[in-house]
Image (cartoon, rainbow, N blue to C red; front, side, top):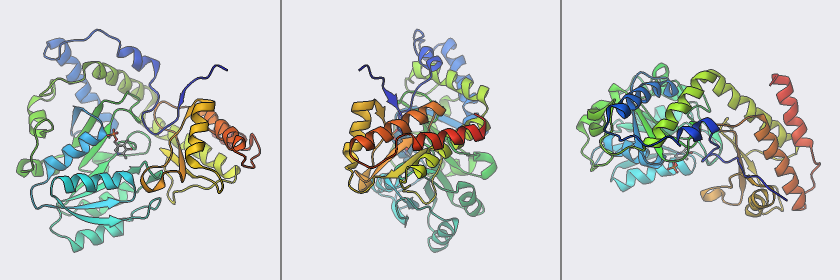
Length: 380
Ligand SMILES: *Cc1c(COP(=O)(O)O)cnc(C)c1O
């Protein structure tokens, strides 16, 4: 039977038609006044997504590029970074630091658990030499969201720079950079921002910029100073012109919906998925489940890799499996970016059918019904 492809993974995520079409415009040369006008406009309007007045640099790269850029631009040889490691992306911060010869003070958090602000406070006390605290607001590999506002509260009166990887968290969970005193926020295009993969963003405040001034780690393409010099009309190297058109359109859509409503939509979709999972008798991995992706433990007797395959190949539902030490042990249903209630119904329904096909005792429709009840209660 004809089968549609439903992207229900925590990145890349679906791209709205309006944004796709914006990318189909003829290319403008990136050094012309016509393009400069658009780039300057986007450099300003993108600040809304971060709830900041600070500079936001736009890179032609994936999110990891912006993470690497952040380490390379803030730190110097022999510097120390406090790193929260509670999943695949916390590990990535640690790996990048090691690649640049930065000393790592690791706050190890069990995968699925959440770091407490007290742990951060302790680490800062024990390591006064540390210059930065590297965190992940939404640890996509475990579906866990941390309390960044409370973390910022303990970091703000120290001389440390608080950095957060918000690649999956931006727009899917509240994040108010200026109000909370987060110094650096890293994000990318292919998750909550509703764009194809290919752009990454770094929002940076004045406190963090002081570290940029003194940083001596090697860098070239990602040198923040080069981006600052060209801002706001240009980038030092060719930007992804078509994606800038798309970014302009996506920001417009987000403004039309209103960022609070975007956060709230993610909350409702996540609530519905969690209700469905509970109704089906399945278990969440995370002790602090966020609104980005729901990580579900693969039930006893079911092959997790096979489950993801059946969902995708039989039903067209592309969800994510586990990463790192969670390969085969969890599945992840995203509620991220351009998604609505019926995307969640699709995910839950195909999960029910796939589990049944694999011989797991499940009552069809039970999860879908629980999700529908959440939507009815929320009046959406
Ligand atoms: C997706 C993601 C990234 C970056 O991945 P790229 O493939 O480099 O874009 C980084 N951190 C988190 C938390 C993510 O979810």
